[in-house]
Image (cartoon, rainbow, N blue to C red; front, side, top):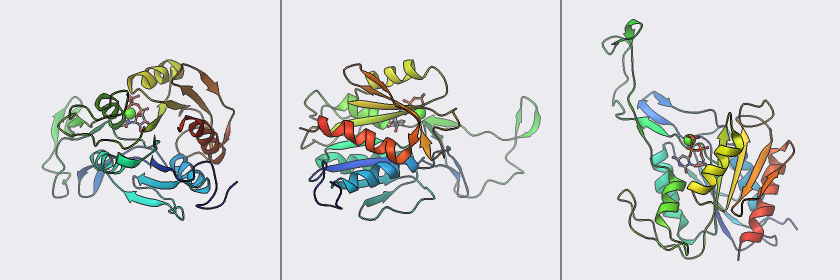
Length: 250
Ligand code: CTP
Ligand code: CA
């Protein structure tokens, strides 16, 4: 049954979906970004809303309309996304990280626009080059795994950030964007981030991944099972994902 905010297999549940790519500033006009369109995450949010959930969408900058009836939190950087997620997860039932979180950010964001003259470095190929020093961003899902024990109680602060005590067991779902060795990389991520489920897609295919309307995914479960789903519209993939999350909710 699909009635906005009423009946549905997610009714009474609070779910957090992250979507889009983060943007890491180089200066006030430039950033390091990625090709995520946000479509998969926005479809997950819309589908959860239709199934009756209270949906919190933590989104990087995207060119998509805000789904009606969804609580939107807009962020730009990975650090902002991490803060938003930590502030919101306390009483959430599900966290789906479909966002393409930047793995690195510029060590320093210039306060003024960087000019093309006066900032060159002498590079391998000669003069006139410019370089950006990148430092690692925290991995939100990996940090959560490290900070929670089996009962999802917060343990020691991680990287100086105490993870809030969760009120209920939090189902954690990750995505994996790969261009090669999809199965091996996906299994490793499921394990390392101690996820309940991982949705993997080969972003080098033309019918799957960034910007496409369709997706071809493999779903990996915590018990080691793997499902190979056919190419489907992202709306259908979103429904398939929630179909598999619902039985995990106590
Ligand atoms: N993720 C995260 N925080 C990050 C990077 C990734 O929470 N700083 C999440 C993503 O939202 C996704 C999952 O981790 O759900 C896997 O992201 P992916 O980029 O595929 O894997 P990484 O672990 O970052 O490894 P790599 O990019 O090297 O393949
Ligand atoms: Ca990554």
